[in-house]
Length: 252
Image (tube, rainbow, N blue to C red; front, side):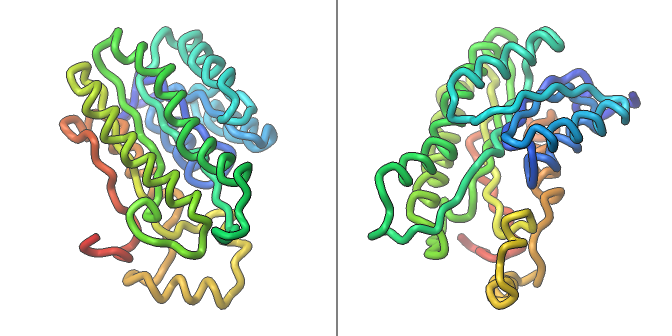
């Protein structure tokens, strides 16, 4: 494989079955990384693995739920067995809910926070000791503009979990800065994924009107930013949460 940005690196990517996670896995594979991917759709993961391997890359997959603490161990062990080291952790797995505040149950609240916040925290906890041993590592969280701006179209659990993820980014970045472990987050705005295909035409138009660029982002747009933060190109950037939303929240 030709010289590429992530040549020789090993990366774990969650939420890789679709959307931003899928785009990130494909991009990392093209850029030379050995990728260990996870998601809940086995067929999709198998397809991604095949495409990466046919193109000359290396990919392993594990089907699972990120809230299962045993999955974290499986992902780490697979990455180490593949190459003997782990260099990058990208947490794309996430979920939203549209339950109004007064109708939300504790179980629904807990589920969103478990996927969006607890899973990245405890997967990071498992990965960081390996980063510390090699005195280097990159962690990228996929948060949301809802971490910084009110979104009444989603349940309060979604914004709260993503805001927590932004804080976790800064906390880990500070705690492990001396180990050269870089921790950053991307806060995407509306992105054209499987979820947006369920929107009514009227709602889609109302969202487009809020975007100065007049179009939804693509998963590949976010994947490119994740690649930047996961690579040596972003060395000396840590603790940041970057808004990527087509200008929707200029000045926020």
